[in-house]
Image 1 (cartoon, rainbow, N blue to C red):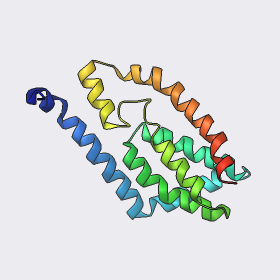
Image 2 (image 1 turned 135 degrees about the horizontal axis):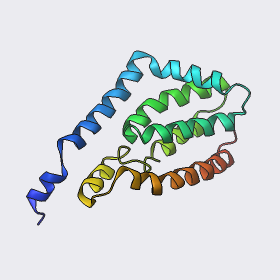
Image 3 (image 1 turned 90 degrees about the vertical axis):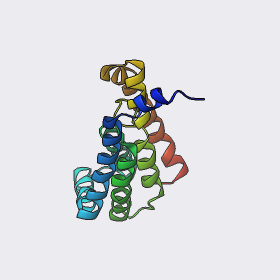
Image 4 (image 1 turned 135 degrees about the vertical axis):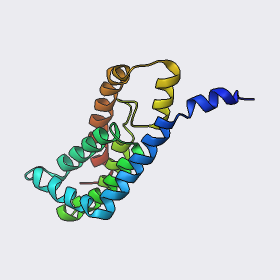
Length: 156
């Protein structure tokens, strides 16, 4: 049986607040029209790139975002942006939505991206820089791999 005192220590107020604030941010961006605006900005900023380049850039942006807010919030923010980008480019949205899904789950370069990371940081005595040191190369490796694989499965 788990030690309830240790469970209570692991569920600290900062952990809960990070999760709630991240989800609220994602919802606010979607309802305010910010997600649509960001889709327009992303298409304009990537003018001249082929759809694969835009998809790759979107995935990298989501990976960065998921290291600042929760992966749930990154997915909530990114999905309507991905659909908007795909529509503006005239391509099927599946690869772009999957790029958001994968990018939003690359939150291992900081403890903020996933609530378990915060719990591990507190319980294990890790520092923020420990996550950066191990997580950043992993994020880059996953991003490059998926940039190569997604277009193979979804002809974009």
